[in-house]
Length: 546
Ligand code: KIV
Ligand code: ZN
View (cartoon, rainbow, N blue to C red):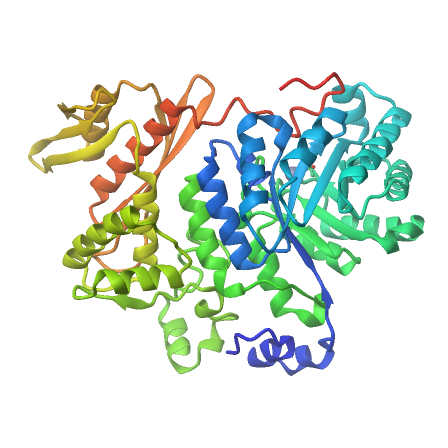
């Protein structure tokens, strides 16, 4: 199957002559605004550090998204710093920051974006009756005036301004049209229609967009965008329907994460539009071969596991189990596959072995986009050698898991030094754990548990004494085979605050212990979610407080 960007090639390679017949020769560009770092970070339990955000932003640039929504600068000093760092260090995409319709928000957003060569201020306000009456306590006229004046203010800082009438799908259409027309007149260059609560259905949503386009002629001069939530599982379907209605920007999150049930999944929108040029007539500038890697990075850093049956990037997306399917795949992959794993970067290549040296490791990591300093490389090399001793084939996926794991365990307060577990059918699971604690000394504790992981967690808890109840625990294999690296994601909860942790190792109990220690460190460092205002919770009309 072709992996080039030639759309008719793709349709043709699927073996359907009808598809090629109507694929446009010159598809229109579709802008992808990725909001993983803003809306995605609003997923319950997700709290990314500034380093995590920078790493994800760099990967999004490698994936060649057009716009990275890097955060909501007014919401916290941490978000401000992260947006600024991304604006300073990430080249390629436009860097966007979110801002409520308050002067202080807009100014703070503009300040965070100062270092970016190409930046966008994204202002929003709730326009639906429920938002106006119950949250904002503002009249239609007040919301319209605030939308207009704050768009105009944003325009004094940046040429590129996006305006979102939050909860557009539940806003009175005539009023929505008035707000959209007013903000275009005030200088908005992108009008984004959010289906904030995931209430829309594809036909109705497409109808609204079509009607709005006719009702507001000035929409033809700006980019029309959509931002669809997944409460009914329709975020991608609604986004695709919008493209058919003329939207030329879609807002997405990697793995479909985001507030509540999440946002439209980037990888699904990317592959649906790529495989169906005859339906959507658009093309993106994405490097599709980076999709899988981006998905893995986001999953690891957010601690949100990707469901195995997830479209495009799930572990089973390219697995064939039934005999008939396997037979077909062996004869011609197109019998049961509409895309090639390699096309989205999900093929697992054997790259290095036991005898590979540090130079080869550095080279391969650089090809994969990792720039490690000497110290990091030294640690990664030790881990690689340990891995190569235990695991015959070391693939790109394994290397990525090792590097991500190494990055997590730099100078954390609590460090796992040693873990020994005894368990079996006739034994009570017992774990002995040695850890380096903030006093700079190694301490040891032993505990009995219901299972080996429980025993290890009890011993770790005894040493760290950081409060946090285990709320979620998920295990996944990085690659196939009995010697695969296992990855564990956990989420801890304490007093309304949540912290995610992640660990990887060929020994699943060790991976589980690492994930727990990682989450405890984040809990102790305050890198936990729960206290962060989000656009949905902080849309009140009162003077902003940070
Ligand atoms: O869902 C939503 O309405 C949003 C806006 C802030 C764009 O995330
Ligand atoms: Zn949203």
